[in-house]
Image (cartoon, rainbow, N blue to C red; front, side, top):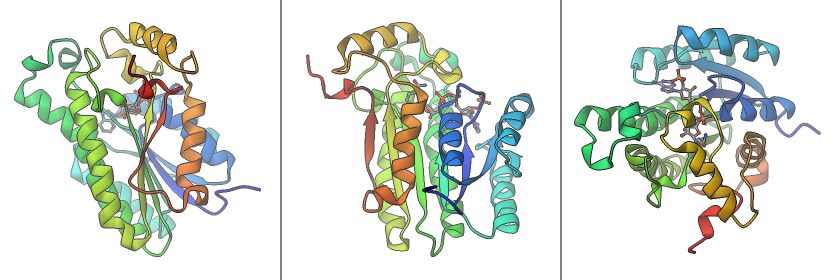
Length: 256
Ligand code: NAP
């Protein structure tokens, strides 16, 4: 049985075949969902379009989430083409490279604003647009976070602060949108080698450190995140909202 047959999902954050959003796209498609994709710029279109078309996507649009007019365009198209929406996947984050290597105390105003805008505020604006298309459809919104929001992870810096804002936003959005039957959740994933991860200084050490200390004694992969995503966007989690679900081989529970 296809769990998401007849459901329509828009996915923000596929950069290439290693993206967590791509693993989630494949899992949702495998369960019967129809998917619309966005990409963040012309260079990415060359990567995203063939992947998206390969799973039958018909709506593939540019969207830099710092540009309101591009966001409007995406949701106008979804309204015209689909008339409604069931699932929003938000798998977007960005911080300037120097802000992921210098000490956090050196973060400048512009770098702080950029990281918070792209990585946290974007969930708010995308959720507002999505909710307008989810009326009467038991919608589900899912974002991606990392435990650098809860504890200090050297070099994660302003991104940890952005993820803390993102997780708090999940709770406030869940409260606002709950009366409409819309659920909002996050997955806090362990480290996975992707394009975004490559921008974090010392990422390789993070992988070793996590697999040594996690109860399951290993790292995770994007497919495992995608399985948890299926749970969170489907009726299997119909009473779950405002949650941050850790998919990290248990790393976050460790004190020593
Ligand atoms: P990824 O493949 O590089 O995906 C990040 C996506 O964010 C890219 O598609 C990127 O596009 C997009 N993005 C950046 N700035 C944007 C903007 N202004 N407008 C629209 N899109 C923009 O890396 P990923 O690891 O799968 O990341 C997905 C999510 O998972 C992120 O929120 C990340 O923080 C989170 N996460 C990752 C890990 C990990 O270890 N990989 C762990 C926990 C959580 P561009 O390439 O064009 O910038």
